[in-house]
Image (cartoon, rainbow, N blue to C red; front, side):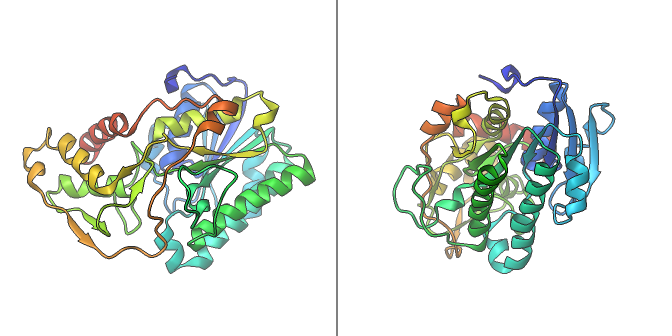
Length: 332
């Protein structure tokens, strides 16, 4: 099922927190195109106005500049909202190691503010971005939702606490919550700049500048890279599901295959060299491992398939073809 075939009732209004960010802006775009009323809440610390500028004149789209660390901003955003897609967070393991206090303020206190505001406004369902970092030092592959290890970073702790709070709000206040544990999401609108840029857009940008990408470690670490369209599908199906068994749980959202960083570099060079043949001859450099990095990541997506009817449409290569084309057209 492509995202164009996804169904969600047009009469419902949806709040997207972090709606000017990478994932949030793609969700806003889908919902506006689906004729839903959308409220985007963002403080523009990591979100970018250019991600949503084309939506600003649409009658179904409203931008609220605010911060989830403010309970009042959260209450204003949740007022008259039917559903919440909570994407706002401070991502990045290295950022959380450098500044654990701000990471906790945004990801834990901000999350709790949003839960309280959503509860008080009686939203129908609260769908939130969880993280594969929750698996921590667990050794088993593929990762299954019920078996996690100890977190390896402050960021991972915050995302696990989100799941605990969501569970408590379900049991205590009867809220409907669904957590989506994202695995290394990539695609259009993902920022390649900055110290905490995700690996795929960062490598793409370096190649486009004819620079050598730098891998932390020897390149053998592997990830379950997940294209943005798969993530959009998961969020919309989490909003729309009528399966009561599916609610009040967490799900792996991935493709279900892992790729080493060395193999990722090879694929990127192949795709990008079609635009610039010189890229094929660029060497890769290698540096020390990053603190807090998990060696390997691979998701079982069986639970999401069974309960949410999640059917990812793009594997890594299919997603990279679309992503590389977007980056070349928009960032070159």
